[in-house]
Length: 193
Picture 1: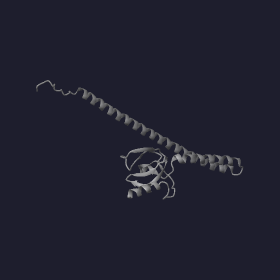
Picture 2: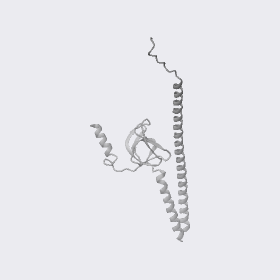
Picture 3: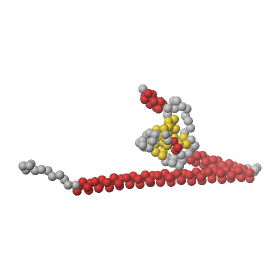
């Protein structure tokens, strides 16, 4: 009975029956993480979540892992330290571009005005410089995150090839040994003893 009640609560909780829609949490921008079927690395991997993807944080934490629903609607467990409430660069990057575009539009409008043109120009240039610096930092961090993701993928591929080679080599060695093992001789039925 308790199990049925737990399942019912879990089914209704993500749909928003018990809680108002909350702001999404995000996977940190500098990681690529696997989505596990339970609270630990010993559980089956049911998918992966890319850096910066929005996730819905469920109120269930066990040890270092917390339960989430990812952007594809899959429910699973990730390291709690990889979940943050700050919007990812994936979300903030378009906002910064929009702010930069707005600053450029304001600069163009103010350039046409004859009153206080120099003051507005200085303010707009400061804003552009600030936004350009933020944009350059965001691009650098994005490139570093993509490099880390590529390195992790390469390391995983190498490990799989290494394990496959080891298994293949052991199989070949066992096959060779089995060929050279002596076979038991059968007794002839026409012998007296």
